[in-house]
Image (cartoon, rainbow, N blue to C red; front, side):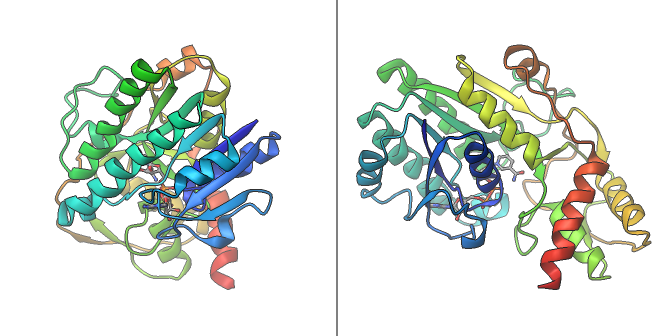
Length: 307
Ligand SMILES: NC(=O)c1ccc[n+]([C@@H]2O[C@H](COP(=O)([O-])OP(=O)(O)OC[C@H]3O[C@@H](n4cnc5c(N)ncnc54)[C@H](O)[C@@H]3O)[C@@H](O)[C@H]2O)c1
């Protein structure tokens, strides 16, 4: 079966592509390499270097005739969405509509899309479930949730099935540690380089870290399920940023302390999420413990930093 993955050269997208290919799917990728890397691209996938906002993506859809679309390409930075909301909306909303239009014209059966914990804002209760009220604190949160409305509309107008996966903090090999990288990637790179990481706030903010290969499995199960809807993809575990740092220190037998600075605009204090719904309906649950996932991630950075 044919799957087209936008953002398939990126961190999460490239793991999804690998898993799809392992499971004998035929995969094509559209990515403009603005944040993805050529070396992430599985050689068995057909790669198109193109912006999702370009009208020529229609030709790719017509050539590849995907039955399923995984729409991962996005502007992913919360701070950048505050600094430049027009660019954020241009990629995350207008780019998505271009993907949806191309999809309906070739009769795509189902679209899988990653929303984000950023749509919940400061939680009113924990763990966050799918019924939790939405209170976006950034343009990124708004654009990620807006797409969920479009998916519902395309289901009702054109009967394209959809699943939105609201992912918590995804971490693992290939995550960018420069600039707008995830906290796990940044801590791993800093500690492996014997440098002090910087923590925004007091470090007692709680996060829910989910391993990227578990997330990729959720996408695969979403494709193979016959349901529509919105599901959290997370671990329901509570780890403070300070605990994350000490866990990585322990694995590396190091004792590197952090420097602390003020928290950033749009940052949420505490967040962890429940995966009961996806477990019940689709049968997914996270498999890697944080320590196992961190060891695999550190191993990856250790090797790539040597190159
Ligand atoms: N990383 C997380 O913790 C997390 C959590 C929740 C949701 N998400 C969502 O998952 C998806 C993937 O995130 P990621 O962390 O792998 O980020 P990433 O930046 O590694 O992947 C995004 C990919 O999209 C590509 N891209 C960006 N703009 C594009 C455009 N205009 N046209 C074509 N390609 C474009 C980039 O080059 C990159 O390869 C995003 O939609 C993000 O919002 C990520």
